Length: 246
Image (cartoon, rainbow, N blue to C red; front, side, top):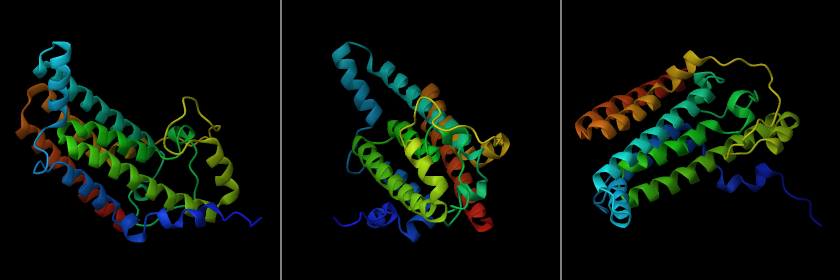
C-alpha cells in the first residue's frame, strides 16, 4: 500500500494562494460588498424572514424585523468579542500580516477551544451582517466566506506543520479547527492577554456591530451607513499600516 501523502501536500490544491493570503482583507471586503448589491434580489433578508414568520405566527412583521435586526447586532457583538479575544493573544502585526506567521504556536485564551477564533469571528460577522443583505446576497456571502476561510486556514496549517510539526500535531488533534469546543482542550501555557491591543486591532469590528445596533433601534439607514463607512475605513487603514509593519 502506498504511503499516505502529508496533509500539507494533500490540501495544497485547495489552500489559499499567496495573493489571496496577502490580500485577504480585500477579498473579505469584496465578499461583503458584493452581497449588499440588491440588483439581482430586491428583498432584504431580515424583512423577508419577518414577513414570512409574521404571516404564520400572526405577529406584526415590523416588530419581528426589529427583533431580527437586534439579534443580528448581538451576533456582531459576539463576533467583535471573539475576534478581540483572539487578537489580544496575538500581536496586531501577526493578525494582519501579509505572510503566514507560523514560527510561534499560540495555545491560550480562545485558542484552547478553537484553532481559528479570528475566522470563527468572521463567520459570526457574515451571519450578523446578513440581516442587512438581500436574501441571495446573504446566501452567497455565507458560502463564499466559509470557503475562503477554510482556504486560508489550510494555508496557515500547512505552514505550522512545516515549521513546528512536533508542537502543532498534538494541538491539531486536540483542538477543533473552526467549531469551538465547550471546554478547553489543552492546558494554558500562561500567556496573558493584551486586551487594549486586542480592542485597537478589532475596533472596526465593534464599529460594525454598533452600526447594526443603531439601525435596529432607530431604523435609520443614514446613521447605519455612516458608522459602517467609518468602521470599514478604519479597517482598511489599520490593516494596511499593520501589513507594512509586519
